[in-house]
Image (cartoon, rainbow, N blue to C red; front, top):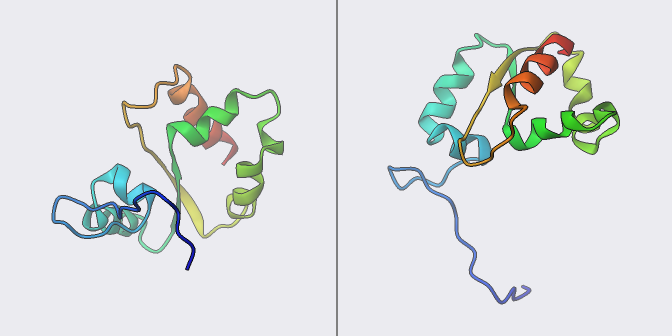
Length: 106
């Protein structure tokens, strides 16, 4: 086991449960995350965050690494929902425009 020289902390929700991932943190915990996923009635969702959508400010965002990672999901009929997550901490004046633009392409 390698020593890192810094503490590692697991993020927890208000109920002190370890959260699943960054989307769970943004939504407020695993319970809310599960309820959000169930809104799709079996369809998958793309979770658009301000930091991720900031790449749309680039002239050719479709060549960005994160877009390449999710592009296979964008053409799948299994993924039909886009949840826009705005977290007030990350300020991007183009967030809402970018989310709309992405939704049109999606």
